[in-house]
Length: 283
Image (cartoon, rainbow, N blue to C red; front, side, top):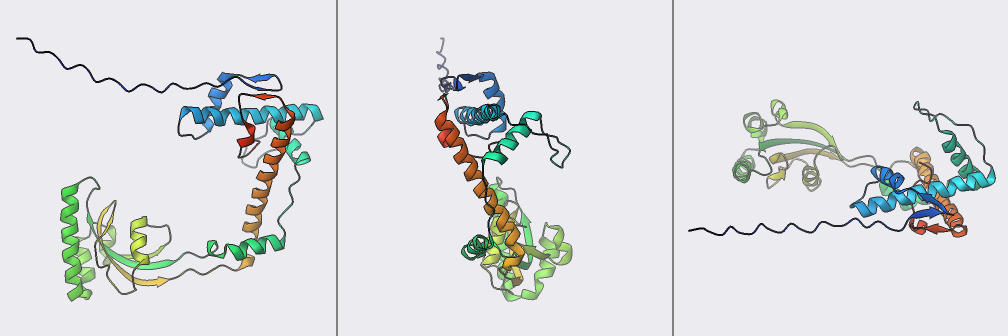
């Protein structure tokens, strides 16, 4: 007797890539092939967004190129200091921006105001002196994780009765190279370890062993914090130049975006919305 075979599952409909109307600036059409090539330079969540970002970038470049021609801008290509030399057109675009976009530098008052409002951003990193015992277990190995957690929990209980045995326990059980130093990790600063481990350290009192195993991608850790040195806010004089560079860059980007908006308001543009454009104008 023949048995009927189940019908194959229907494949999900493939999303069609929506191509918008042709992109043009004052009658100059930007070829679709050029936009397609440009998409590789733009991170996006889907093809439509990549196409949109690429179209904006090329539309802005064409808009500025037309302004270069209108103003008869001439410029000598420069080296970027890393072995690359501008193309003649890149030099003209740079000269256009330098000539037409006024960018005031951040003064002392502006830098000081930003520092006072954001002083927590200008701290030296916190330092931790810690030791651990690592019971290694792959993230996707549930059985190994359970066994590692059980072993780590038992060790924490033992250490509560005999804290001085930590180094011996690390030498015997830890899968980390630090086991040869009794589990000692030395100084660890902000960002030097995985987030879960750092979070555990921040919640601990020096001299204590974390009351529960600390789980990370590497396995289960028994963690002891030996010493903590909190970071301090850096003096204004040490960060003034960094703040000035940040503020100057922010002002420069806003000024360039406003300049493009003015040019776009005078131009005949189809297929792209330059009002939402952002990012560097001259790549």
